Amino acid sequence: MIQITPHMKILVAVEPVDFRRGLDGLAAVCRQALKTDPLSGTLFVFTSRRRDAIKCLVYDGQGFWLCQKRLSKGKFTGWPKADGASIRWDPLQLQALLWKALPGA
Image 1 (cartoon, rainbow, N blue to C red):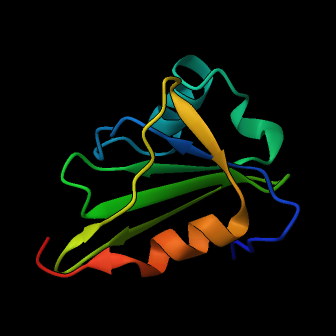
Image 2 (cartoon, rainbow, N blue to C red):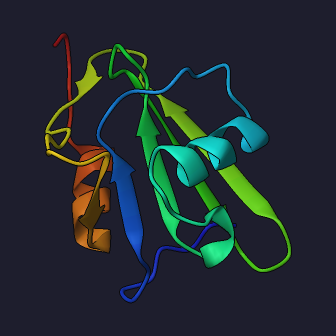
């Protein structure tokens, strides 16, 4: 199970990714676009183009965890905008994102 802890490093990809990508494809995005080692223990957060789904990828020392949440209605609001490819968040910001879906948006 993925456990989000207060000391965990979280990187949110600013640009949406192709959600047909699996573990290897998202790990490649981490290396190439985000310039970060996916084996570092960082939790990576990605969104779909429509902002109705997110994927989280993290390496726990034994293997990768990949989880996805797709909303039945609405969109994830408050997606970050930045000059770079990613932005660092703290765990409370991620929890707020997970619960701050706007119905019908």
